Amino acid sequence: MKIMTCKQLGGPCDLALRGDTADDVIKAQDRHLKEAVRSGDSTHQQAHEAMKGRWKNPIKGMQWYRDTKKAFAGLSEA
Figure 1: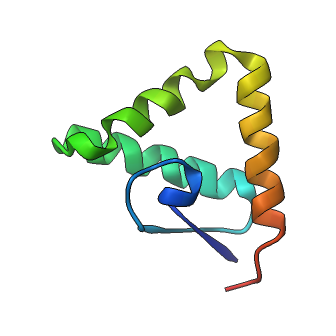
Figure 2 (figure 1 turned 30 degrees about the horizontal axis):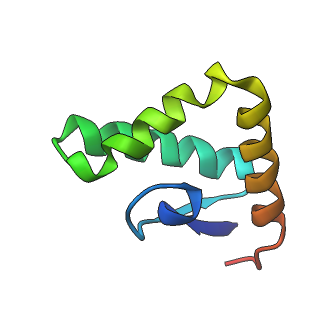
């Protein structure tokens, strides 16, 4: 299991997100952003919009995904 923070994934906080794969961590970030915005946390709004809009530009979205997978691969096991 590895850990990335909300901030490492483009968010505003240092919440630790854990997963066995980069996809697990990305899904955890998506859930975290949705929950934060739903609870009225405006500091996460921009990151939430970026996450939702990332796939409107597939080239940029895939670059973010590849960069995230690369960063995840370079982490030590927690």
